[in-house]
Image (tube, rainbow, N blue to C red; front, side, top):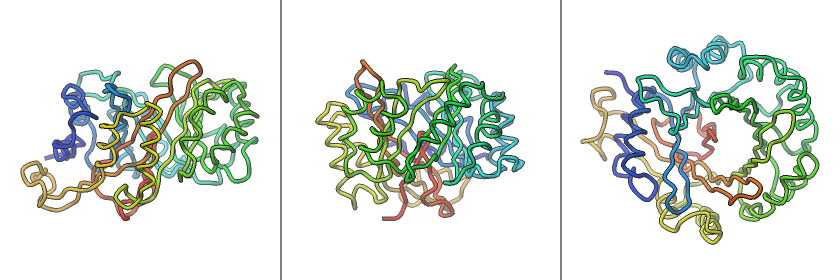
Length: 342
């Protein structure tokens, strides 16, 4: 028997319920997850506004074997995954694939994913623009886009760095998403004033939500200009049961009407784990035997800002096999940065 991501969703069945998940969304998640390997951790991206039911599924790849397996099923990303598996893109630490459920094909092959590469802190900008991003995009960068990306990186304050880059080709966009870490809310606004001042008014409205939050990330999309969509996300190393600031952060979202009270409670209750002994009737015994742990982590919370639109809040819920070799390396937006330990 072959272990799939759907096996872990089966273990989680009692938690895949309203208000975060409706039955139709769960059915589509399972159908997609049946095409994805169960050795990888996944993340469920859930919308927090009242009534919003859309959920997307991301998968983290850490090994060449995982990349080769997915390359055979994903023609649109095959070239990049095989190059990474063959160590032609050595600085890339891990890769995330994000599958948008609204682009589900309904067949036995998953839809083309958004691809995200995790980078070390010191990444050479020339290598990034000349090697990695062309590999992600499947072609060299246009001169204007390359220049804009390099200008964005050159303008970063000393305490900030680039952590993730995304190709958005799967969504019909030529933009590259940059995700920056190391900036507090005030510094994010200062950076945006220097790079994309037209985005600042929308971001100012939500930046204060993240005051006192750790592990802050700023994301934006770049063509030959910075596009209007700006994301801010944050998290804490400890689980909500040991970290009261999770409750404070989520309550701020509730007060701003970006999150329903019921969804806040469900998100904070997500972390934990299951084993064969806690869920024997749902455990993939044929594939796993009685061994293993299926974890549940609250990775991070994100707010997306677009001018002249209401901000959108999301939570990222990690699930799947425990991987002690990478605690702290689970990523976002792909991405989980919560540790399993307290």
